[in-house]
View 1 (cartoon, one colour):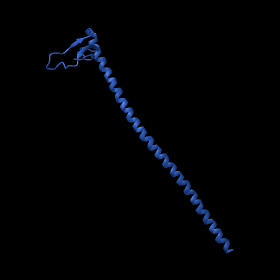
View 2 (cartoon, helix red, strand yellow):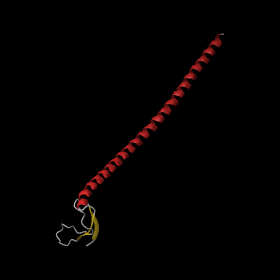
View 3 (tube, rainbow, N blue to C red):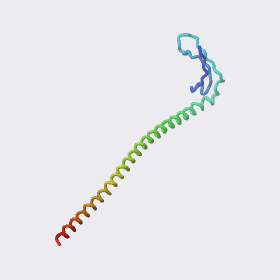
View 4 (tube, rainbow, N blue to C red):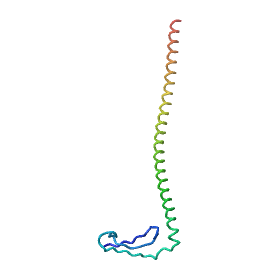
Length: 124
């Protein structure tokens, strides 16, 4: 039989330390060890501690919820950053295509001008 030291967080004995065996106290055998290590909590402590514990648990739950919310926001941020990179690459590609189109248009106009000049110079 192994004895463990624990802390009670029940409303009747909040924060009170005790030792108990690993054996389940509800087992069929009557060999269960249990002993309080602290004095009983004062009436005011019994009245105040449960409320404080509820507040603490609520705050811990709120922290967990906010941590989860932060994690989701960070995942969304990463997705948006990836989309921004794709858009920037697309914009660069579009600008490059626009510049190429202008150069090709200029080359076409220049070639037609040279062709016209060449044809006109042959007629003279």
